[in-house]
Image 1: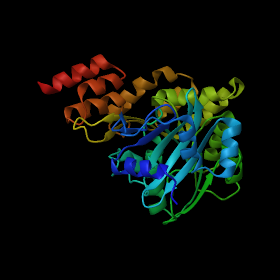
Image 2: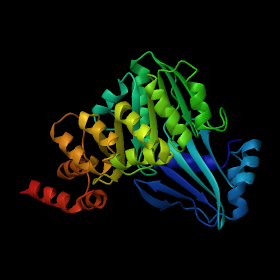
Image 3: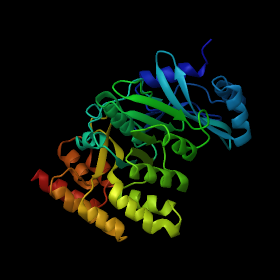
Image 4: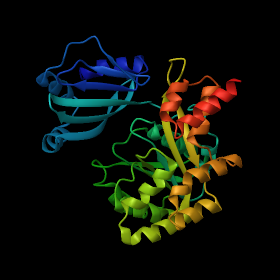
Length: 358
């Protein structure tokens, strides 16, 4: 007998929503095109919410949840798809958020992402970082790049995730997917092991601690193509964050390594389409240049936003967030107010959008 919560998850998929919020003391809520929409269901009591959620947890997961008061895992609904699950305790009782993971990894073209991401997927080595706030589509963008490598290049790809989200069946490549907690104790432990497994590409679900960051940089230096994600809002902050994670006594060495091994930073946000149907990714893209390496080595990261604008003008693939937002407004893809709320320089964006209308 299928878990009762699967009926809610089928509704999420049918409505093309992105999330289900299932919380004691509240009615179930879905996130549709960025907005929270209550479902026509009663408020969940603490006991009822717990019974629903315990049906999809293994004995080991229940034990871990009761010990830690929170847990992350993936849940499969036959004929519907996979869901990334976070269950935690809150003031009214148990709380869960289910994030939809489509059955098939998307392509870069399907997501409407810059073609420069194809260039990043064709690199032989180095470090590529995908950043953005929670819910900005980092995992989906990363999955699209890995799918591109898998379908086009005969390489060994190792992913370390918490939990595994998109499933990548072997195509031209050989894909090894490992989950923290199920297949390895930590990102750092899995990375150490991965370097002994003849990898061509290593995907780190999150660059969350100093050991993971240093191992990722070391892997890039040895000739592996490394992808990782960070929770930062811009390309400039992403590089700053990588350095700040590390102890101060190795900052100089980390800057040197980043200056030679960084191959790209993809910093993205999601906005509502002005049509009201779906979301669109606004991608800030920083690609390497001599000037970029110089700024990183000399610790002049406060100049990175200026560099992005300068490199963007040269048409080599780098693009600023505000330029993308202005283009979207001009195309009628997103509303001006939504773009201004996200812009680095709202005044300049409003002026540029107004000038385009003349």
